[in-house]
Length: 281
Length: 274
Ligand SMILES: Nc1ncnc2c1ncn2[C@@H]1O[C@H](COP(=O)(O)OP(=O)(O)OP(=O)(O)O)[C@@H](O)[C@H]1O
Ligand SMILES: [Mg+2]
Image (cartoon, rainbow over all chains, first blue to last red; front, side):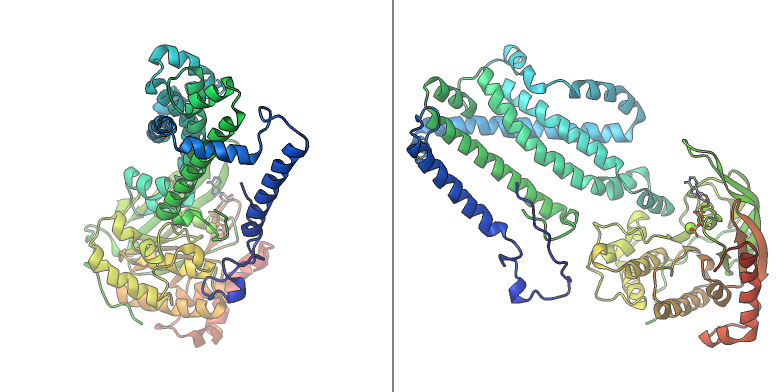
């Protein structure tokens, strides 16, 4: 994750001068620093491993990982595994965050729901959810269902906490304004509380997708017949560490794509949550 | 630059005494915060406002001016006493008031025009019809061209002016204004004072305005309610007997100066410099 460097405040009305364009490296040094440092790390890794004669089952050089990745991409088995895991992640994620969103609304809207549900939420939060994976495999089998449920469970909690926090964060003055206009409870919810919660909701969505990926992969380790997590385990049994790294690269790319997609949604549907245009993507 | 589009007039109140359009009698307000001692914000307040009258509340910080307005708007309950508006006890939110808040309180996800149109949206009035009025109001306060911007792109004073438009857009009978001009520079403030007087004269609204500026209260009002803090009490009710329509030069007159000095005396006596 890159941290945006501090930037000079620019007037909105002002046309950006050429010297201060978006792609000026003085303003956004990460545009150069990230690729350059990446190349340096890969080079150091490649030649370090060769010079020190590190066995490839301990740490393979990047070139071997790349080779393995390219080979895997040509097998139907890889695409099948990718498809299986993608399904688990997306189905589990959507199930988890949707349930959390609706429950969060119910908790904030109703005292009774809050008092009833909250003790369970607090108690459950301290349980390492991922540790339930073996149980879920026993209950729901080696197929997709157990993985979907684990992915749902782990993405559920960060989303729930964020939705509740976001809805509660609604500005008291704004609610008072709505009441001064004789707004209904429903209007206050849709026009003030819900929009106010958007930065939190998107934070929940962002953390949730990472958790869903972890959940699906770990659940596959416990018991599965296909999927990227399953594939990862196979490579470990075979001491194919280059193959394992290649799968990790694929998982990292999946995470990045999902994160970017959520940022895109945020920009599209809640653009005002980005207080400054300087926040790096 | 004048707002001509008049929306359909609101419901007519029957049985209401126009001389006691707003009627406050022996009103107390005690805040009871959960974690600290009770605060007596208002004690024994009593005044009436005629329909179409312009009344200002002045007093040092913390004397309960905002509290008084919120009770009038039905936003918070009084503790005891009487508070009536248009012949009915004030019991909760109502649609015949427009309120300008001390902080502009715009919704950051709405554009300026959408913010101004909020009352129309909430009260399900005819959007097409009121849109022209919203644009005229924005033009009047000097915000033309900013209607599609978001609040964060505007200065504090500009946001406050948008908040004034929002309070006026649905043409409420009663305007409650909590330091509406606090964030404005002196020039804009004088201009807004004159515009407010013009709107008031043309529309016949009843206005209750809170201000920190004694000259502003004298210039605008028919009557000034002078308050003192801890607990918030009324110390004097000053009738401002100056001819109308009023021009800015009026403030140079001896008569106006005398009113300002008379009101200011209360604060000096209380050790508050204003
Ligand atoms: N929600 C609240 N809970 C507890 N005490 C409050 C609350 N709101 C106001 N008060 C107290 O009531 C008193 C009057 O507050 P109020 O906001 O009405 O003053 P004000 O005259 O509007 O002041 P200012 O000129 O600074 O805006 C103050 O002592 C304040 O601390
Ligand atoms: Mg106040």
